Length: 164
Image (cartoon, rainbow, N blue to C red; front, top):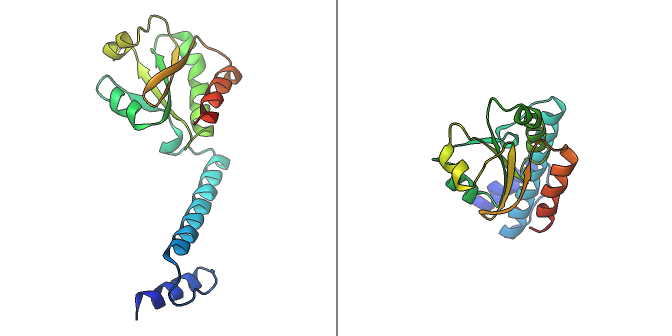
């Protein structure tokens, strides 16, 4: 059986209309991409309804060793500089977790413990915590000092999403 015939049978089984002999590969790719996006959206929606958080929707733990590579890997990343003894840091932590879930796939969130990673904290002159820096294309573009309301932090993040 030729590859074209196999594709016709396969696509017919997943409920798509039968494709003519010599179908355009770009059209097949578009259909596959659309189906995959729909499946991912359904899975994400189901996980949110059940209160599950995928790895995609969790802040990543940053260290002195991983900071540069992680920041350069993501076009938009929000980094929370914190410490375990810091009360305001504990107050904003759930906000960061929720924003990471809500903006999964659009914005990456990271957390860097300043006590365990002093070199990175020093590099960015972190003197007070919580200190949240927004990086776009590996550069600091904005920051927020202190435990601020979710709406304030979210408005800053949205402004950088809109300029992508």
